[in-house]
Image (tube, rainbow, N blue to C red):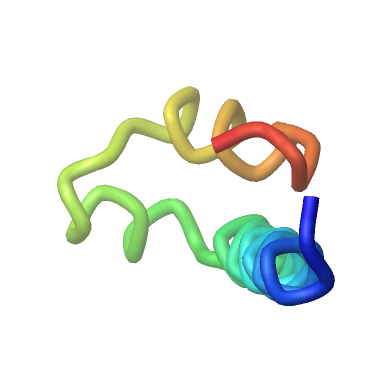
Length: 52
């Protein structure tokens, strides 16, 4: 693995982590407006950052 690909992977993980924290903060109404069920939102928010 090159330094460039390592940095790219770390950036992607950080982005996922931040996105999942934001998803976890959403209200149930907002989740439904996005077309997701609360269960789908919870599943996505609880995934570890290294899983796509």
